Length: 171
Image (cartoon, rainbow, N blue to C red; front, side, top):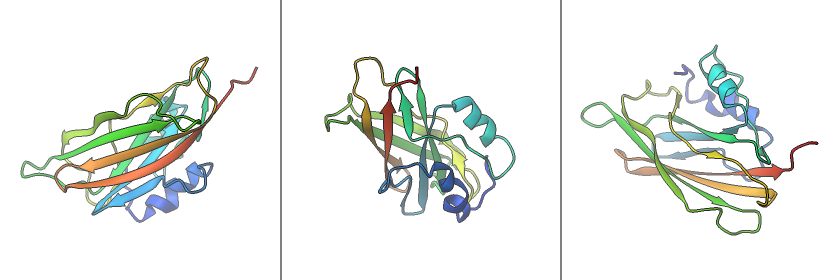
C-alpha cells in the first residue's frame, strides 16, 4: 500500500511513464475514483518497487517486444466502500491492433475483488489485470488499449487509453 496523497498521483508517478504516446490518458477519473493505467515488461521489478520506499521508481514501458510478456498494472484512489466496508472495482480492457481491427475479444475481469479500501487519498494497487504477448506472425506497430474501471458501489467508470508500440526483438 502506498502512502502517497492523491495530489501526488500525477506529479510522482506520471513522469515515469513519459514515453506514453501524446494524447494517451494514463490517468483517468470518474466521480471520486482515480486510476493510473501502466504497463511493465518487468512485473517483478514493478512489484518490488511498489513495496519499497515512497515514492516508488516503477519500471514502466510503452513498448511490447515480440514474444516477451508485458503486464498491465492498475493503480487506484478513492474507491467507494459498501455497507460492509469493502470496495469492488471491475474492469474491461479492449485492445485494437495496429491495422484498426480488434485484437481478440474485450476482456472483463474484477480488478479489485471485494476488499477494504486503502485510506482515502492514498494510492492502491489493484491485484488483477491483464498481460499481453505479441507473438510471431502478429502485427508490429501501435496497439491501443482502452481500459474502463468501474467502481461498482459508486456507479462510476474511469476510462483510460494508452498505446503500446509492438517492436521486433533485437537480434
